[in-house]
Image 1: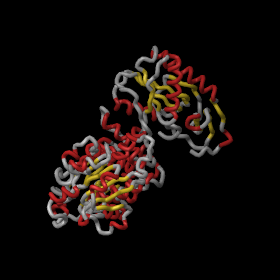
Image 2: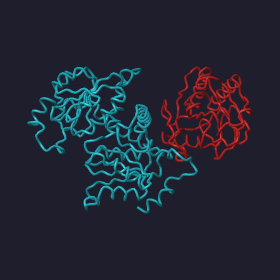
Image 3: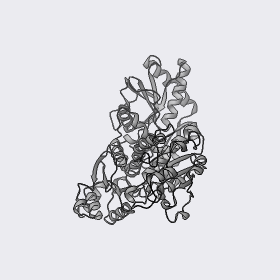
Image 4: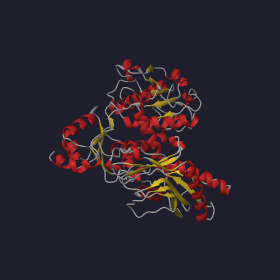
Length: 195
Length: 336
């Protein structure tokens, strides 16, 4: 997991491209749901939460109403807990009842699908949503589970030994998606690790 | 964290990690499905050589809500009553492949000794001290700190939690492991602790503790941000600590008239079980500013947090693939 081949790093989405992708995704989500009724966005920490907030802001501008937005930490639902030292648990805020809501799970990178599997389990323990959708900024392929995204910012074909990093101003001081060629196989996870 | 044996072992950062995670765990209490899968397949044994209601049941609930299998063993009805030694009992239970032992014992230091015996066997089993003699009760101090922190944050969200807060711990300090753990924990968080007790119930050597002491409850109450009443532990007393229960109540009980001495809204804590009418009056126990039931609720969240931090991952050390804890340690255990 060391990004050994540092020279092979390139930007695949810059700030403007990210903004355009998010604007399109916001419209798509609203279109698929025929408006904002019953919608709730739940970001998966850490960068999924930033992404959910940005999508909610874009959607609020279109619809003229606030979209309930929160975070759903899935750490305790992961299938790799005992493969590594105790993982820090993130923060969950569920802004309204999950029951009968249309929940849009939001994450930065979709990779193995294991994080999303964990998120579906976590949601199931909170209630019974009417529907669950998945929105991701980058789909880099290499799924290990039968999971797909409903709304994708960018489909990014990658090799397993490449590393996709999403950086947001809120968490990283810069808005960009980069891809780095590394030696080892990157493990998938909510923010680039694991699963 | 490998074991939780003493609050004195915890740094301020350790405590903050436990309390922050407990905040997340507390959310489970209000959910339709009170279950997290984090400790699926783990086995936790409550090994209680002393009576307990809330500690044992809250460890049991905490373990079950994290999907661990929890087994309760109490001295009564076990081989302990046939004369089995602590060492043999601990190693026997651990040999069954248990991931954590929650130990309560009347002898100070018993859990630490158990941890040493387990380490000598190469066992991976974690030990949590659930109260040992008059030594420590770290999870109680953690839940007290959690309860008080929540309370302080409610009224001063941007405050420093414990920095500069004055907290009185009142009553039978000599016999109280709760007091010892709380002194260690609260002072590590920056609080100033005042111990209030009759001279007969103030432990010898208290002068070396990082606390102030007093034998005048009426003088202390108006000056503190919170008051923690201790149970008078008559089962540990051979008599002679105070003339009569009535006299104790008059001098050191949190009676109705004394409630008026507290700052408005200053919270009242008690680790339970309460001797109503002795160290605490019904008026105080049921007052609006009593946090006693909040403490009980916090007990589950804090113990979930502790169990997750102890059992939620592999050991620090060799990475994933080289270590599968149960498989690796079972043969050793089988030889015990």
